Length: 141
Image (cartoon, rainbow, N blue to C red; front, side, top):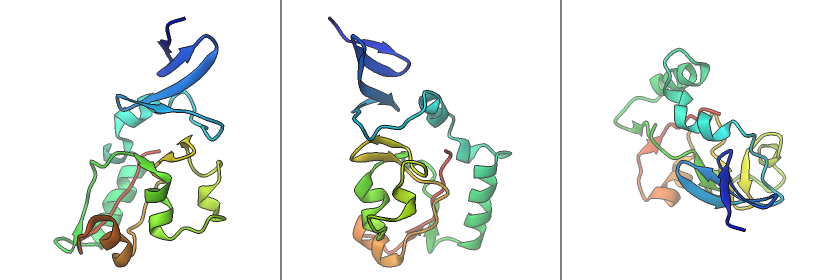
């Protein structure tokens, strides 16, 4: 049977095998906990909608960290590796933010960026990007 796309997921018979997020397919597994409304929510970029709480939080945070020392990368993909979201920023394995109640897991290795996101330490950002400029990142979930 040929797989079909239903509800932003690829299905083969009755088993969903991949989630489609931002035009890309991601394999799913027992870690997946994405509600069905997530694909359309990602496209709305709620952290950029002026009247919504994620945007208000983003603007307030940005106002506390002036440029050019700080940059505001508001166009980053909300889909990141577990390593980038947790490990590279020093979150221990047992940190509550890693739980399925606090983070949307696409699969075991991929998550939606946890919002609101405060800036990482200078050393963590340098390790990730090679840049001394520190970002201020917020999310829209």
